[in-house]
Image (cartoon, rainbow, N blue to C red; front, side, top):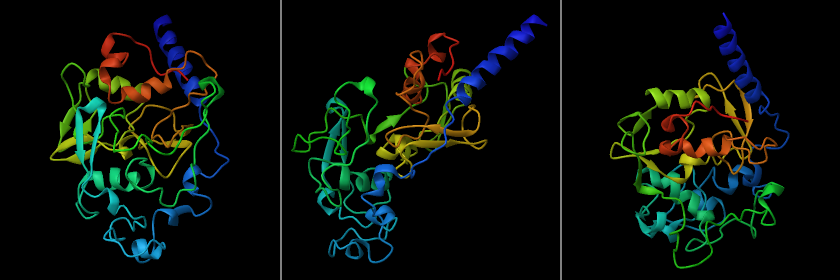
Length: 284
């Protein structure tokens, strides 16, 4: 009886901590992607692609997700990330039908500081950081500004940056046709505690990392967890930052909060509690 009571108390404690992070958004979820009031049309053109957005005729038409920004300057460019270990050759057109089209090429049309023009951006649009981050409390929208296509210090991304199951660093998950299923002993525990919110691209039946794997460009500061989510967290709207797809709040007042670390552990399983013998769960 005492053991059952202890389990119930632990579960209720976890639910209570998670519920404390459920938020009520009071600002537009697009956040910085309102783009000075232009909203959806800053990126998507309902008519005539880039011409409809005043960018002139371009080979990057609106045939793909009604894209209205000129990304032709990025076609076929090579980007090297992850300390030089991952080489990505960007698609030669928006009709390439690979995950790096809508997962990288369209994003870099505005967010690359090396090759692409600033496009519709005005100076820089950024999200304020918590005061705990120190004096550097602004996030520039450009990935880098060093020039020359130098993205070596960036997180690995592209069609060669794969997410694997098993081995020394992967979850005990399964991978079929590029889709990851978190049904192993440790991976299912992690999903129960936090979740698996990331959305890798699928290329040659492999899961690959693109910008939209971690970032949802349509919601900057809130993420919805529902019964249909791949998560054991209580349903509700959770605080996030930087357009990330999962609960992520570095401004949490609890110094023992591990939610930001949990976000990274969705792919970096070898850094997780579950894969290192700890029973610690997500702490908000």
